[in-house]
Image (cartoon, rainbow, N blue to C red):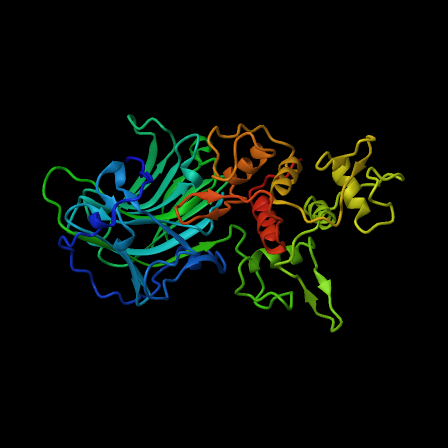
Length: 453
């Protein structure tokens, strides 16, 4: 299989969906859930995804819809090819090669579980429905690509492809195939762990690859595409529909049904991650006058609290702080002194050096997103890492302070930043980090087993 092109470039609206015939699409009525790998294998609650329970265009908070040239530069990927109604997302491909694709802004991570309920037209083999994981920022040293459902020339045969090398002149991929009726709803799932990749079709395992060299080494995200493969003959219109996309945590997602914090709802963004902090004793929030605990999710994280979070994330190791503080602005009796001194001893933070050679920590100052990246990188033992020559974030230069550490976060799926209207990513390095986002960063860091020995 060839790599899915995500070439950028805005296509003139006059060229988009020029009214050339479209294939009849079944009524967009939400399907039943069918047999799910998540249910059979006890993956726990959904932690991210889209049920498409709205009407109109795909939710821009969840999806980046392609507005570009098509696969291999052929045809057009148009936002107007997508629509959502009656619980189903539909993408149409017309006879001229105008079709669509989109990438998920959620669960851009290293390792996890994804499941998608999808069906497609079987009448045109030049249109390939594709459900895939794609490297964040389209960057991967081994050109990784996980197509966990792709229908190709034989429209009654579904394939799973794991690409693991950049040389596409040879077959550097592992694969599985199974006969299906693509016009019927089926559930396609992938489980990605440090040990390898496993695929499921309607709850049944149909693909596995545990070769270490084949496992993607960078964070990835969900994509949904109806790709056009012209062969010089006339193309018939086609379509693809998705009932839902669901993401599950590798640990089963143990977020409690009742929030441990009175100011955090169970439906709130990063709820699972904040509840995980409480469960692990990394953060217990504030005890209010009525005895309840609050988390204050939108509040910035102070540098002293960040020291405490990292110390607890590391397992609260045995440590005796020095009798003399390493920082002139942190007293030995101060809250979190032990944790701040531990950061200094582990060379995670050296603070600021004054003109007289003394150091300050500025404990009550909010921690910025670039400094947080440096803390996590050092907490992981400052692993050997070569930062890309092209920044994964448009607002970061490769010569910027902590560029290597911020790129490392992106490569490991700990932070993907913000997806802007033009599809590029920004990191906002000097912005202070909020407590809800910090919970997500620590959860992803822990899930990717990056902790230094």
